[in-house]
Image (cartoon, rainbow, N blue to C red; front, side):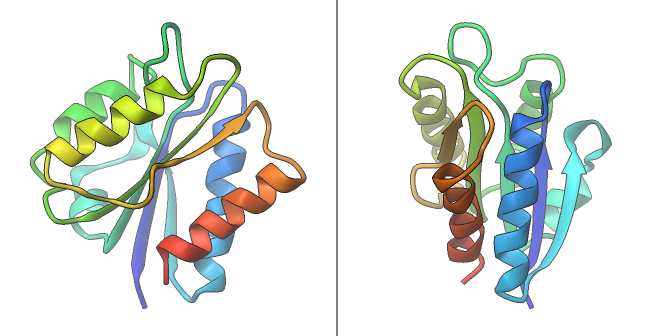
Length: 141
């Protein structure tokens, strides 16, 4: 059984819903999933997981959330080498540049990035909700 830590920040609930849907998909593949708001996350949640999923909405000029998520991501940069890492988040505008930058950044720390991240415009429903569940299933295979 794979241990999956899903650590996320959500301001409006969109990214939190993505986290819940991704967790559902990973659990369907038999993984043990921990859903953790970033304010409650510890380095042990990263180190002790087989798969790490990080979620943040796009903020401002297409960056991850700066007050909680950014410092946490910076604090784990030495702990993601050779770890399977998936990234996800919601956005309201833009073209996904924040996700491309985040994927590149985590890859530069030695993480094994799963796909190119999972992004959803605003609240995940319908096909976008299914996309999140499927992302969770695939990363947990």
